[in-house]
Image (cartoon, rainbow, N blue to C red; front, side, top):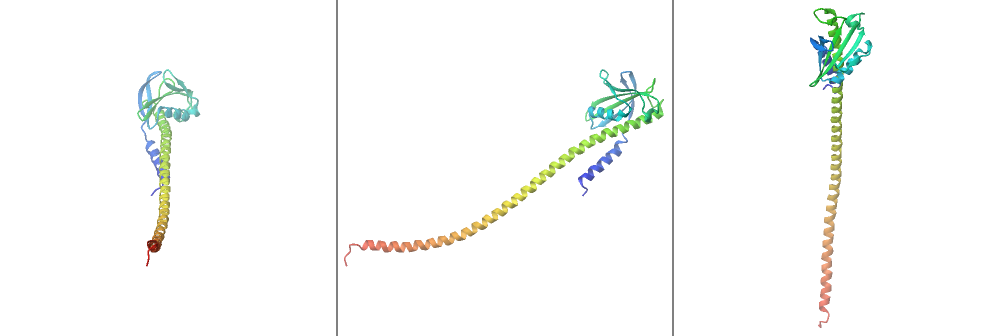
Length: 225
């Protein structure tokens, strides 16, 4: 049987391989600058808070993101992300939405007059898709890591339950040993009791003889020969 820790490791590796192939969808989505080409990814098991926090961590090397509360958008202006646009600056916009058992992350890249789209920016589109896949994997690793913690806790609880059952089993065996000793002691006491009964019976028989003689003596008092 494969140990639980090994199974968890295999599970994470398999999940990382499968999830790296997650589709990044391109679609026109309304944002603060009107409907623009966006790239979005749905992240199963994540909530909006985790998706947002991980994205901030993911892009922190390119600058500090800010938030447009009114538009519910996050942005990074005039930054350079070499993997997407080389040394040329770009504006990055992001939005996070809560779904049922998942979160969706939308990303817009403004190259300065045009938003990245597959029709006009093939290389940037390919790079942005990979950029978001890497981000997706980062979020999913956190999601699965939390699942691992939950399952480890469940395993720990089961192990505690097993430990209690084993301790109970030991206690029951001790009770049996105590009961055996008690039974053995009672059996000896029964034997002694039988001997005591026999002795007491003999004493009673002797006492009856004595009583008979004394009674006879009583009855003979005053009688004449």
